[in-house]
Image (cartoon, rainbow, N blue to C red; front, side, top):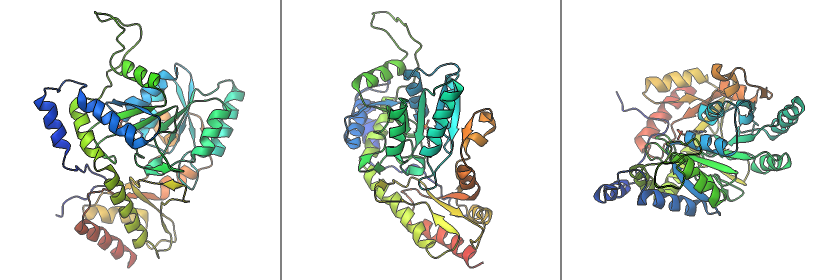
Length: 377
Ligand SMILES: *Cc1c(COP(=O)(O)O)cnc(C)c1O
């Protein structure tokens, strides 16, 4: 059996162990320490805006602390993109609030500004103004940020930007992860860079960063003993994980380019194939890290999505249907939804293909062989 080709697997650059060794040598194994500060500084420099970064234990923890700081509580409503990973929406439930899901638009597959505004008006009419809007840059493709930011501003509803999949992507030259009232990143094992597990909150003020760290470290008030006047969390990143992150930052741009080459590879393979389209940038104002390359397969294609999935599986190559929209998930079946079945159609016809920055020539040959065999029938 050939070795497994994954959708997206960790890709070390080589210097990660140097930072970890330093942590061991200086006995900074306990949480916090110089790697955490170093990684936060690296991220701030990379994002290239007036941002303040707090490293946390996961992207999910970052979304949770964003909602906590926005005052989301029992019976509140929070607007969320429907087509996303469940981690975007679960923290709404942690706070006892209700998600209101919004359909995708066809260009970026992200939150549709038209349905967003329709939902806000309708929720206000029904008597509950949503407390926050969670927008996602799915698969690294930037959402329509001008339109969404304008709506957030007009209705005065704060924006949480889930950039878990979009580190290295830009919208009109500005880095994804710098658009929200709170923005979040993930360094989970399958993301564009990894710390084995981890995330970050990107804040637009130092106060928000300080408060994020306060909440993430059990909300200890100033006192010689342990004094608490708020509920705290144990969400800070460890100094060992942050060491991996520092090494990964050295290869981030290189890995973004390699993922973009994977996308170009699929565009070439499917160039003349009717009924198959590769998700790509719809205009020159967006730049995607192409975290995952995805295709849509319609009935004119020479093969079905299921056939492609099955044949890849037989060749020990991982593929996966697109994210199943949250409004179709049993766990969220009670939640309101505003849309026109775009995300359903995407889910029913889309497939994610192996996209890692560590795929080699031999891997690409194996992928090409399976696809060509199907094309030739
Ligand atoms: C991975 C991911 C998250 C959660 O990040 P973790 O670090 O795994 O908690 C949130 N949103 C999206 C869109 C993701 O892909």
